[in-house]
Structure formats: structure tokens, C-alpha cells
Length: 335
Ligand code: KG4
Ligand code: ZN
Image (cartoon, rainbow, N blue to C red):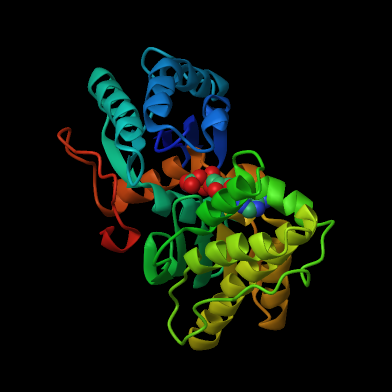
């Protein structure tokens, strides 16, 4: 059984995992440095990079041990590592580690696009899913609508032209004086609020599939300045309703234009309760399978990187040892 070690260090999670060719997860370890960043209201790149340096060794060792592998010379098919997009200092820690281990253990290694990794997350939980799948990939750094014809065969239909969905959550939360990351907090507050309290715009309702959340963020700031008496839960509910509405409208448009067998959510914002409910309802309406990753598979982890790496090792072959990190590597440019 071919096993791949995955390594992920693109943002604030230091993660390692072992996955087999049938996409069974043998181990998955995730350490987050989020507590270091909270006081600053967002991830501080330098702190994240230093935390990765301290954590990557123990995390890889634990992933190998949990999978029952020999720490000195593990029987692996190869090593997969996120080589972009992400924070340059953070990416370099994972990439250098993967290269060093590949050299020491005489194994092939492959650089994986972090967003392609997110696209493999649903596959780790529903292995026999029917293709094609329309995927809404929404995280702290990216928001895309992707038509997937099979594993690793993806066409980006649209993406955000400004803020990512998670970024909008985090910025609005910061404006409201809530903690970081803001998504889970706003989601929790919204459940007790009224979405009719504030009238907020649902932007980008044209014919294309591009997304935009910057106007909504500004509208929340203006509305809360004008109506300072509106309860926090009501602001949260109004903002969440407008943001989810935009995502669902675009997803609906994509489903009307492209025939698919299923619809999937991926990325950190896929943990959102309103979005999960909305996508489930949309899938039912279009009579499609729905793939909602568990919370652990929504957020950054290395199992999804190992899965994408398994595919890439076969489809594109191993990477060269002089591979560079690509902080702005777009999914549309993945060959
Ligand atoms: O995919 P992820 O773990 O990291 C990136 O690659 O960006 O996503 C993190 C993002 C953060 O912006 C966080 O606020 C958001 O996901 N998030 C949520 C929820 N849980 C996490 N946003 C909305 N509702 C949630 N329940
Ligand atoms: Zn991510």
C-alpha cells in the first residue's frame, strides 16, 4: 500500500499527515500558532514562520509514529508539501523540511498547490463521489467557484476580485470588537440575531461567477455607524445573511449553467452553519449529491495535501529539488 507523507505550513497551521493511495488517512497532526496572533487581530507572518520552525520536527515525527512508521527510514511512496500560495516565510519552512527529508530518505517529493489540496478534502471523506462536482472553495485567503471534472481536473469559473469570504468575516469581526478569527464568532452570534435588522447590499449579482466582499464590509461599517443601537447579534446575522446570499446566488448560477453530479464545500468558511444549510438546500433543489467536509477537513490540514500529492506524483511526476515557494500561485495556473 503506497503511503504519502503530507506537510502543510502555508499559514498558521503546522501540519503533517500520512495518507494511502485509496485516500485513507493513517495519521493527521495539526498544531496551530493562532494563540500567538490573537492579540494582533490577524496572523503575523514573522511569528507564524518562527512557530513553524519550532513545531515542524515534532509534528512530522508524531504523524509518522501515529501511522506506525519507522521514524528513521519510513516506507513511503513520497513526500508532498504545500509550495504555494501562502506566507513566504511559512511556506519555506515546510518546503525546506520536505526537501531535506526527501534527500535523507531518498524519496521523491512534490510541491502541491494549497487550493488544490482543499479541493481534495471532500474526497478523503466520500471516496466514491460521482463527477463532475461544483465546488465552492471559501477560506481566509481565497474564494473561488470551481468546476471539477475529476480529481485534479479543475476549471476556475470565478473568484473574488477583492477580499476573500473569510477575510470579510475577520475584518467585520475586528470592526465589531470580536476576537480573531472572526468567522466562528460571527456565525455563533448570528444564530441569535435577526438578519432583517440591517439592510445590506448583495453585491456582484451579474452574469459572471466573480465574487466581491469589500463593498459589504464597508456597508457594515457605515450601517453600524448610522444605527449604533442595533444589537451585535443582529449585525452579525445581517452581515452573514448578505454574504451567504451572494455565495449561494453565484453557486446557483454556476449550477444552472453547468451540469454536475454533486456540489461540494471546501475551505475554512465551509464550517459556516448558514452556508452549509444553504448549500444543502440548493443541492436538494437541483437533486445533486452534497459533499460537506467535517470541520477538521474544512480548515487547513496536511491530509488534503498528501491526497493532492498522491495525484500529482502520478499525473505530473515529482518536483525538482530546486523548486521555489510560490506565495501567489493561482489554482488556475496549476498544470
Ligand atoms: O481555510 P482556512 O483554515 O485558512 C485559510 O487557508 O485561509 O480558513 C480560515 C478562515 C478564517 O477567515 C475564519 O474566520 C473562517 O475561515 N471561518 C469561518 C468559520 N470558521 C472559520 N467563517 C465563517 N463561519 C465559520 N463558522
Ligand atoms: Zn486553507
